Length: 166
Image (cartoon, rainbow, N blue to C red):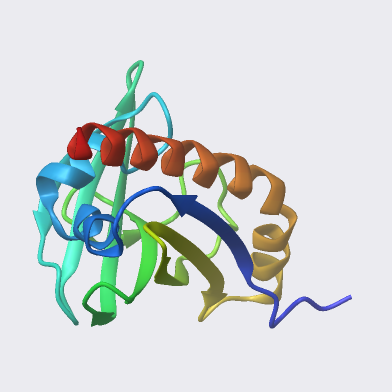
């Protein structure tokens, strides 16, 4: 069975203006407060939030250290953020995931934001690019884990938005 064109997709609704949700992705200070797996502290090493820009960060928890990098492709203020997400080394070079030697090196993600009556709907959709069939298979086998991880991250975004609006 081939899932070659299948995307991982997750939808969340926030009681916040679309501009505020978008800006939570555009600021290093904001990202440091909510991005990443629940329980991991995030250090933003670089944020150049523009097409062809990068977001390089370090995640730490209980002595475990991981690095990640986004390479932004397309940004349409308040509506769309497209980026390639990868694990990286300390310098921001794309690297293998610490948990799997066959995890795809690059995952293309698209985030869309729409607002209706003060509720912003965030949809993230992603799929591996430049990947082997084996890498694709492991990516698709991780959907439940990815859903849990992104929900934890987006719970933190919700806490950040609530705190920002109060």
